[in-house]
Length: 333
Image (cartoon, rainbow, N blue to C red):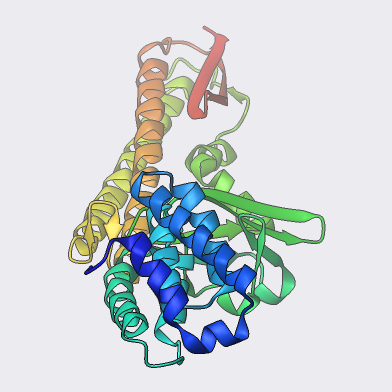
C-alpha cells in the first residue's frame, strides 16, 4: 500500500465524486470515521470490532476500498464464505474511474483467488429419506433441498446439521478445517435402526441358531451335548474371525485407495472422502467380528473342556455387556 490504511480510506471516501453527490455530508463523515476505526481495530487485533465498523461503513458507502478492508476483517474472523462474497462484490463495482478504487478492486480479486481454496465444503446426505420429504438446517439456517447431496461452502468451525420429517429427526455435529471436504449423513427410520444394530448382528445370528435350553444325551457317549455345543461355539468363533479378516482387508484396501486423494483426514476429492468413510466402516465391522470371534471361541473351549463323561443339562445364553457380545453357559453336570 502506498498510504497507511486509514489515510487511504479517508481519501477514497472524499475523492469519489459520484458517491459524494448521492450521499449526504453527515453520512459520509460517519462512514469515514467508522472505516478508519475499523481498520485501526483490525490492525490492533480487535477483529470483532473491525468487522462491525467496516460492515456499517460499507453499507453507507459501497466503495471498493471500504469493501476490501471489510473482506479482510471477515477473513481474519474466520467468516470465509462471507469474505469471499464481499471480495466478489468489490470486483463487480462499476463506479467512476478513481485509481484508488481501481487498485482496491485489483487487490480484492487477488485476495479472493487466494482465499477460495481455503474455504471448506460439506456435502449433506440423507439415508432413509428423500430431500423433498425433509426440512434440512445447518447451524439452524435452512438448507435448500437442491443443495442436499451437493458440496456447499462453510466456514471452518464446529457445525450442526439437522433434518426433520414429521415427528422424526436426525442430526449430526461435525468439525471442519480450512480446505477440507467432508460428507455428513443424516439417517432416518429403518436405516437408522439397521446402522445401530449392525454391531450386534453376528451375536444375534448365533443366538438364533443356538437352542436356549439344550438337554444332553443321557447316554455316556463321548460326544455328548455339551461337547457338541462347545465345538459349535468354537466354530462360530472361527467363522467370526474369518469375517473379521475379510473386513480388515477391505478396510486396508479402501484406506490405500484414499491416500491418492487425501493427506491424513483432509481430502482434496469426494472420492477420497468416500474411500475413507468406507475404510472406517469396514474397520469397525472387523473389530466387532474379531471380538465376537474371541468371545465365542473362548466360550466353546470352556464348554468343551468342562464336559462330563455322562449326561448333562446345559443352558447357553447370549449376553451383551458394555456394548460387546458374550456367551453365558450354565448347567448341571
